[in-house]
Length: 348
Image (cartoon, rainbow, N blue to C red; front, side, top):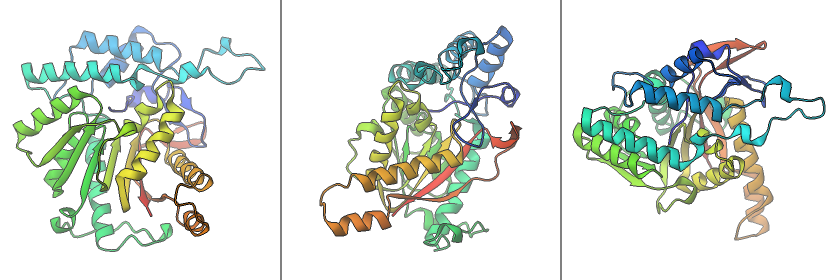
């Protein structure tokens, strides 16, 4: 499972997400002309050093369908003074359905076997490289005790790139897709690496690429994060676009709550989850985690003692830790935003 990205050329024209002070790009537009579809298809089929996968005609068709399915707002003529909210159906997309990803990864797997292409690099290689280098530094900071118990004391400073810190981190990549993120993390010194995806085709592709490229240490498993069968916890959980896709399901709000419940069980105490999103700002992700913490306080689980409830209030499941500040930004409506947000939260 993966998220979507729009090209910078589209950013000034795309509909913006209005649920937070910081405006953020969404996945669709009201009306897509032939030129729009061409631009979107170019964005959809992210070209990189790793190569592309599907033929151009199919990518154009997929992009056009995605633009239509994922549009967030109706044309202005559809609105009336007493009906200001967009239809719920307009907030959903085929990208939130497993059937889409099963078909997409079967296609990518076939292209790999025939041409050696590795598939899409979601959000692009620049974002992937940023996530990897930033996460590596964050983990070293935590290992060296530079990230203290108060958010305001989190430090961003040069650190000694010492692999001995990274080898002790167990890593889970949720919605791993082709698994290239884990390959790059392995190159940086992480050794205990696991990738999961609910699409069997994605896991077949990830395993094939890992075998070809000599990354036998990476484990890939078919697993749905919302109904995970994993029986272990990890110190680092990564999500690059999976939460975005979950939110595009027709039952997105419910499934997002299920997501955080599951991640809280998969993440070891003191562990870190790093979310990379193109559909939500840093502030929106922080608020979503705060809402999860408040639900956890309001509905405590067994054992249900007064002391347990007091501890839960003092120590919510997650706290904001840090976020990437180096992504390119743009202005919209007087606010500064970026196409991508990467935010880290720590479990108490």
